[in-house]
Image (cartoon, rainbow, N blue to C red):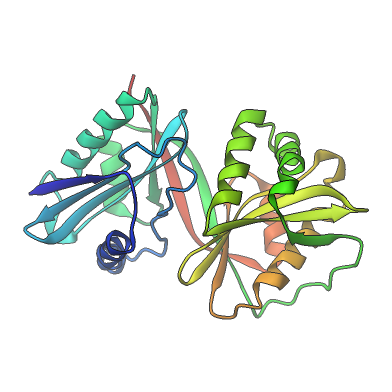
Amino acid sequence: MIIKEFSELNEELINSIRILENVCKEYDGLNGNMFLDNSLNFNKNIKNLFMAYDDDILVSVLYMFIPTKAEAEISAYTHPKYRKRGCFKSLIHRANEEVKRYDIKDLLFVCESKSKDGKETVKNLKTAYDFTEYLLEFNRDSKILTPSELLKIRKASFDDAKQIIDVCVDAFDDSYEVSQSFTMKTLESKDREIYVTELNDVIIGSCSVSYDENDIFLFGFAITKENQGKGMGKETLIKLVEALCKDESKNIFIEVDSGNDIAFNLYKKCGFEIKTAFEYHRMNIE
């Protein structure tokens, strides 16, 4: 078995990962896709992709999403015929060595709730269950209310960065540094953009959008606390989905913590339905 390590993604690597992913998803009856995007990683030099080959055939892959030094979020697949043969163990060993070089303390393993082999793996690693997120998909046949003209949404520019950062700090209680990093890296990315919500020409909300080959993902959906509970979030999301639905070839997704009933109910009212669930299991490596 040959293991290769990468700090950058390219089309060839992504295509080979997707081929293995589709084999595993069909075998395990899964619905989710591995998140593959290095644009938000806090350090571009970190090796965050580990791939195991049998001759020239990709048999196991481990990918780390590392937007901050707090934790590395790990997703992995191993070909059904190569499971219980040490492939994943070898990859996680290499990943462990890499994150320790950058003083990252926690590994957060992502496991689709329906994955029996995945759950067995995180159990064997002696991880601790942390939380569950639902992946919701917009149903284009859903009937949602026509939004009012109270709010305006538009694509953001770099000139909006300061206001977007302030919105995120207020809505998520994140530090200014974390919100600044996410905002600037999203604005700089070629596959991402930010939409902002304006009330009387003042930005009161934002939502980041990521574009994949066939899918659109919404993340970082934020409304300032002062304007929460007033229907602003619902109107923003309806208008945003309406704009994104002009591209009929792409599916629209959003994730929500299973414990966030307010956001979950909001998304359902706006036409989103559960596609699958992901469990997150934490392991401290200090």
